[in-house]
Structures are given as C-alpha cells and as structure tokens.
Amino acid sequence: MDYFRRTRVKEIISGQKADQKVIILGWARTKRLSKNVGFIEINDGSSLHNAQLVFSPPGDFPELERIITGTSLRVVGKVVKVEGREQAYEVHAEELEIVGECSQDYPLQKKRHTFEFLREIAHLRPRTNTFGVINRFRSKLSHCIHEYYQQRGFYYIHTPIITTSDCEGAGDLFQVTTLPLKELAEKKTELDMDKDFFAEKAYLTVSGQLEGELMCTALGDIYTFGPTFRAEKSYTSRHLSEFWMMEPEMAFCDLDEMIILIEDFLKHLISYSIEQCEEEMAFFNQWIDKGRQKVLQSIVESDFAKITYTEAVDILKKSKRNFEFPVGWGLDLQSEHERFLSEEYFKKPVFVTDYPRDIKAFYMRVNEDEKTVRAVDVLVPLVGEIVGGSQREERYDYLRKNMVQQGMDIEEYQWFLDIRKYGTVPHSGFGLGFERMLMYLSGMTNIRDVMPFPRFPRSAKF
Ligand code: 4AD
Ligand code: MG
Image 1 (tube, rainbow, N blue to C red):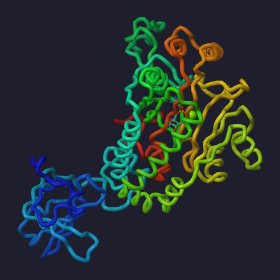
Image 2 (cartoon, helix red, strand yellow):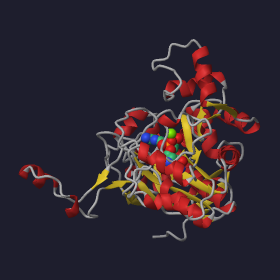
Image 3 (cartoon, protein in one colour):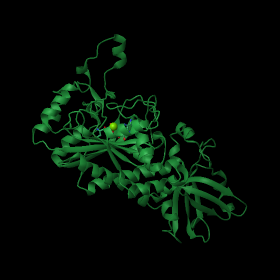
Image 4 (cartoon, protein in one colour):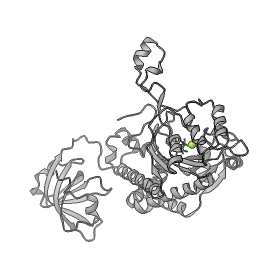
C-alpha cells in the first residue's frame, strides 16, 4: 500500500498540502453524482471533517458507480484551494481505486442515529462522527494526563491488574480462577484454593492505590493510569464494571496540599480540552451540550467550593428537598445529594472533606475527633463524584487498629503495614474516574458512550 506515502485528511483540510499531489486512504462517507461532475466526501479517521474529492468528468472514473457509504478507497489527486466555500480545500482526483467494497446493508447511513441504536452496533459506532470525536478526545486527554504528571516529576507505575488484595474493602471483586468450575459443581466438591493457579484467591484490581502507596515511599511521587474492575450490580449511567482510573500518590503531602494539586490538575484538563482539542470541544458544544464550553471556561476562572461532610449534611437538611434517600450524619452521600450540592447549591465543582470513618475505607487517616477521616471527594455538576481520595493513615498503630476493626487479615496485609514501620511519612493520593471526567468535559450523559467497549452487568461483548 501507500501507508508511508499517503497524506492524512486532517493535513489536507488544514491547508498544509495546497497545490500538491497527494494519496488519500480512507472510507467514503457520501457520494453525489451528476453528469458533469462527481463528489465524494472521504474520511480516514484523522479528523471529524472529511475531504471533498472532485471527479471531473465522472465518466473517466468507472469505479464511481460501485462506491457507496462505507466503501474503502485509495485516491490520488491534487489539493486545490476553493474560494468562497465552507470547505477551503478540495482534491481533484486523478486516480480512484476501490480497496474494499461495502455491503448494501451497511447500517451507518448519512443521518443521525440515536445513541441507543448505536450501542446495539457498538462494533461500527466508532465510525460515526460522535464516536470518532470521543475516541480521539479520549486519546488526547490520556496524553494530557501523562504529560501533566511527567512534567511534575511523577513516575508512571504499572500496578498489577491481578491482585490478592481488596483496596476498597467493598467486596465488589471479580475473582480470577483457573479452577474447573463446571466439573467441581458436577461433583459437588468444595473449592480447594491450593489447586487454583496462584494457590490463593486472586481478583481483578479495583484500584492501584495500595501498590501505589508502596511505590511512593520509594520514588516520592508516582501515578498509575489503567483499567480497574468492579463487580457492582449498578446499571446507572455513571457506573461501568471496567473503567479507567488515574491515581497519583504523593509522599510528604497532606490533604490540604493535595487539594491544591487536584484543583490545578482538573483545571488543567479543562484548559487543555479548550485549547488543544478545539475540534472536539466545538463538536460537543454544538451537538451534545450547547454552552458546554462557556461553563467549562467559567470553571477554570473561579475557585472550587470546599466544605466538610458535616457542612454538606447541614446544607442538604436545610434544603427542604424531598430526596429519595435519607440524609443524616453517618449516612453516605447518594448521587442525588452529590448532584444537588454541585449542580444546584454551588453550581460548580465542590470538595467535600472529612467524612465519617465508618463509611470510608480502612486506609484513610483518622482525625483528632476519632470520628472522621481525612477523605476528599470532588463532586461536579452533571456527573456527581468524579474524584475520591484521602490523606493516608501513616501511623502504624492507628492503621493496624483500623484494619483489625474492619475484620481484615493482618498477615495478608503486613506488607502494607510495613510501609508504616520503615520510615513512615504522611502521604496522600486520589483516584480520578477517567470516563466520568470525559462525561463532564463533553456533556455526554451516559458513561457507556464514552467508553469504546463498555462492560456492565450482563454485558461484556467483544
Ligand atoms: O472513590 P473510589 O472508589 O476511590 C478509590 O478507588 C481510591 N482507591 C482512589 C485513590 O485514593 N487512589 O474511586 C475513584 C473514582 C471515583 O471518584 C469515580 O470517579 C470513579 O473512580 N469510579 C467509577 N467510574 C466508573 N464506574 C464505576 N463503577 C466507578 N467507581 C468509581
Ligand atoms: Mg468514592
């Protein structure tokens, strides 16, 4: 093929190749044929926008007849500037070759399809405008995350995907096993873990945090960014069974210092989207959520709100709202409460700190009141909780006591306690749900539409 010689559509429409001869490899989006001239819009995935190919006279290109939406093509032509038209550059074709025919029953036609329909043909939806934009945006934002932390001296750590620990203690674990389950069930035998692959119970990780904590006591500042897995039976538009989380962990950093970093980081992701992802933001602003860009711009320019959990409960109680779930000190905040706080009360992102220890994980640092922990969640309009984190319990005795109270097997987690035994330091970290951040930035309202291959209960296609 001409893989190394071809020009991407993106370069053509940006005018970088004016008056030059180019080779384009891509897929036909639309075709218009008349007696004197033929037009094809071609897309190669490099941009939301297509390049316009002009065939004149069409009779010189007999293949034109067989081309429909979806046909893959190789085209050679000259890039020409067109005055006074929306599309500033077009390609006057000289050669046309069909690389792959497209069957007539191709479900993606030039019209708007609903997101529900596109979820049913999830193997083809990446070819639509919306999903092309989202997938390019995902890629760019991933890059931005790496760049942000690398520039600040953090090291990227690959924490294990298969793990024997349960970071969040919520029990939402997918077990990994090679035991012959069917055979064992038929024989009605007890499971013998010693016969399993790792000779102990192993799971898909819910978070890279515990290993991240270990690494930060060696390298100072680290981050992880990878897939995490939760077997929650949640069918909501904000939960996936497999999602990507980015988790930094900082040694010698307390909660207040981390909160400064979180705000700077989230604002950086917003600014980057506005400045470096113009095509994507313009698309979201026009087709997904009108005014999105203005909202985001105003977030960058103002300070996030910051309250304690106790203050949050007071606000919710005073709101006189009829919430579906009860509000009271000691109860976890539900999505409706989180959205009320960020969407209606503060109308911007809000930090909520110092949650009751009983509703948070074992590793969070206990406050002097012994009732609350140094936890922080970030709640944003539209999505709710986007970040969860804390200052960690760095005191050996406190941590051990907490673990015993929560019924954890101390021996199994001795390695985690050892960090506190050998040169312990105050340290903090958080997790950003990558898909939830994408929802917030784009205005997309269903998390299944910002993940290329979403997994949720009863669905793990591909
Ligand atoms: O609040 P979570 O459970 O925190 C942790 O896992 C900590 N170990 C992170 C840390 O301190 N290093 O999850 C963090 C974030 C949430 O705020 C949310 O944005 C996202 O991960 N998240 C999910 N996103 C999609 N689907 C799910 N089922 C999610 N569960 C959590
Ligand atoms: Mg959380």
